[in-house]
Length: 98
Image 1: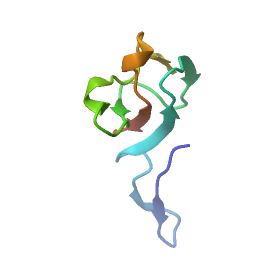
Image 2 (image 1 turned 180 degrees about the vertical axis):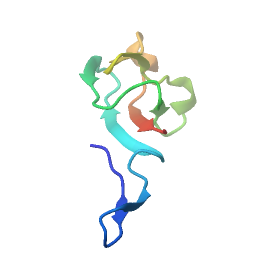
Image 3 (image 1 turned 30 degrees about the vertical axis):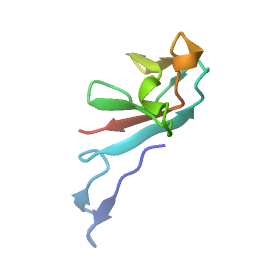
């Protein structure tokens, strides 16, 4: 779900519109280390940026790798790291920044 803010004056004219001008969160998900899948993200286009963040903690975390992420149109696909011994739980976050 995306978020924004519009403020209108008494005439109904927008005086502030940050629903499509500032960063909006479009999608967020925790990906288990062994999950590979995809989803459609409404609003995803070339004005978006995504992050795949290793959310493992502890002594072995630096040796673990987040999911491989690819985007095609409005479809986001994630693939677990091939060797599960080195796969990490991952936080996928997609922002629209236009």
